[in-house]
Length: 328
Image 1 (cartoon, one colour):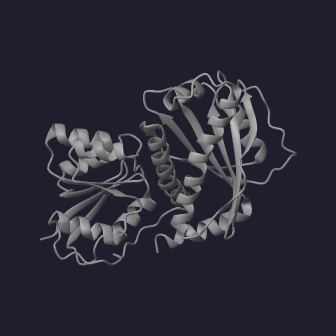
Image 2 (cartoon, one colour):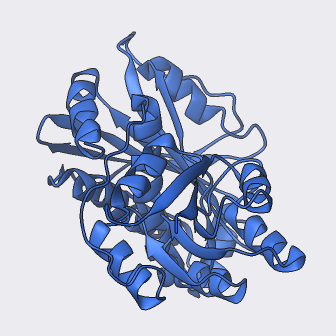
Image 3 (tube, rainbow, N blue to C red):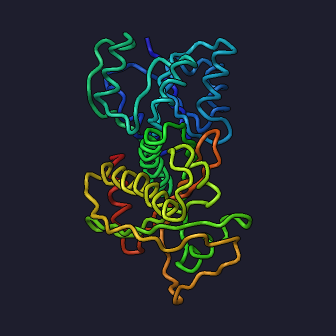
């Protein structure tokens, strides 16, 4: 008997990856939804005996889907597949009624084990299901960034003992001048501090910028138990947050591509840059740079920072090639 399976993820890239990870010998009919609202409608229409659910989505996220499914007593077996791998994320989705939690990107082996574990498909075999689905390169970049930022959020959450919110990454192109202006105008009411760290590996090179709003400093020192240590503590905290986020995030990208990035030393390029009035000081460089921008906030605390990964124009072809390999 054919089983209706629903894959809910805002990323076409992630939907294709997930579909390809399902066993070839599993008799299923696959449907897709790009957000929680579409997902709930598909469940009501009987398209989701089994639901593979992302958490981080626009319109309605995965947590809201889980809550509505429970409140309306909708019939579906939910397996969460997410880049948010914080222990508390796992605990929350299980408490909401999810059967299990899989870390992105889901492997055929892991999917097969989960299906066997719950008796959904006892003879699940490992193999790539053939899926004919067009995926834009921008969608690929966003999902690659999403998986990487989730790994960095997990480390930040563990280090501080908090829950970290990491919204969907933003992908764009801009010149160096435009990037500098964007950073200095992030918040007209708050000053920022910035750490830079270069990276290079296998045809890909660029710069990571950690931008921390200075209003975050007070809560960060409270969370970490380092109150009252003065300006040197501010710099230590800035570099500490940069160390927690930059390296793991870049490793998250490198691991997806099966490559290695060499990292330069982190450099504080500005502290207490304020108020959105400063202008960039680039020397007229108008080359377009690919930007992966990721934002992190700490639940119940005034902690807000952004990580911007800037890839050189020469890196884009290599990035595109690596991304295409992930869905072949």
